Length: 371
Image (cartoon, rainbow, N blue to C red; front, side):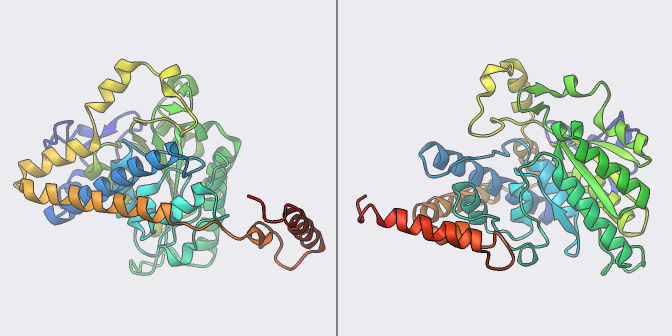
């Protein structure tokens, strides 16, 4: 297994097959991915970026309350999500748009959530076991660990049945590694040997704080302190990310316990639409990472493997259609009924919410229909 201080990479920044020494245990799995599936990875990434850009524009035009971009992190998300099996359960943070779409989530569910027309967003059972977004930093790691403990106690892992055994995959950012919840989750996961993979998207900035101020050592090294393996992977290399995540998920399903992945990537855009990264991020750093765009890397690789330009152009056209459809459907979204904010606050009808709803109804009626 690779050292936590070494980086697993299969494709260099130009898309050439150049495995690093740390990639040796994973290279065969990465390079065994059929060409058609590699094209599918690019399709996932292009669709996600088109959706991301369209949603950011909608927010700037006043149609969304907030937008959380994933621009630049597509390879880390697509590679890891495609490595999961259908029976696995995934716990996201709040920018895992590609992961949700890979699991079958209609991107409009994310739009409705960030427009403020829904409380939760979607039913995980109907969307590939993809749980709800969590905006409280790091709390999803505890949710995931508790769920993984349940998987283990139910005997749903470690049976040797690849079609049945389950694992849990939880996403969080480099900033969340400083949260107590995340460290508590790692303690419990190690103590109970949960079938779980912790996936850090190290995009180098926790809002305005650089990762080197958060940690003096590579984040993957922290795993050893909790008694689990930690692997650092080039998160802009979709093949390496796919291979590493798939290997560790297989081991977790087989009863090997938890592991941690640090995927090195970069947040090209803002932390959210309320953030201005020009206030704290150097332009030369942004330029350096922009040259290592994960979409360009995979495009170059596919072209070198003989994929025609017409195929890649077709993916761009399909992604543009998706973006246009998202924009159209967003502009057509109706406002939710006023009663929606009082529903599901409690599992049963409650006199407090009923009285609040009655008061608000009377208050609204006092305006006599004036706009």
